[in-house]
Length: 377
Image (cartoon, rainbow, N blue to C red; front, side):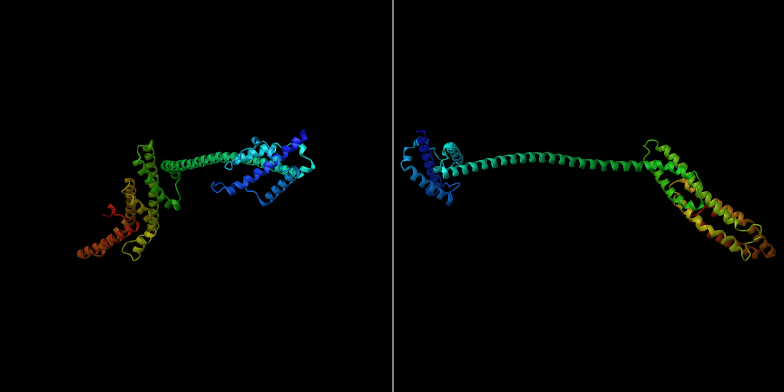
């Protein structure tokens, strides 16, 4: 009795499942008023399987079995809600998990049920895999967000560090530029403590330029600490440099005078007088003029330049006076001896001699210097 009841229940449930499946697919096709489309319409093979199942049920159990089925067990179906269909399939499939349906008559239905269960397992596995993938993606997204935030923070920090570095470099350069004026005092003092060679005298010209810049800087920045002390020290350095230049010029002038043999009695009236007293003397004139021009250009900046230049003019005048005194006296005595009875000729000759002497001395002076001197008067 229990077996018959189970058989009838199985037959009725299968018939109901087939009818429901047919209605599910046909409801979207036949109902034109309801604009509801079937979410998963049956294929042709599915329709053939349903027809085969329907024929098998009718031939084995008859057509009246379904009439005895309790209508209260029918699960209402709503086409608009796919979730209800899933719930209904789960409830219906749960009724056929009885192992007694493994007889030969139910082999086709059993295979279909096994396929449905297999698909359910695969769908559940796929659903679980998708959930795991979504979790991994969420974790990856959160990790990416954290890394991106840290990267942006690091980038902003690097930009700030670069800006600070540039600012510090500018400050360092400014400090080094200001300290260079103070450092040059010690550097020049050390270099000028040793008398340079004659070949190194021209290197003093850039040193003079830098010394002038340092003195001007100390004057305009007298509020700096110890600026007055360094200014006085730089003035001492300037005096050393000017003294070296003055000694070098005096040495050249003395050597020019020594090239003329003073032991011989030369007069300015002799034939070789001009070559002797002017040609030889001005051989070293370019060496003196290079340094003298630097002094002349700086006379307006510092009175020490003008004083040094004046000392050079004085040395030049003394050397020329020492060199020409005896020769001029001898020339005048010769003129007086030749024209002792003709005073007019003596005066004319004497004036012409002095005029040529002044012209030659004037031209020779400007071979050594460019600026006028009181010693020409």
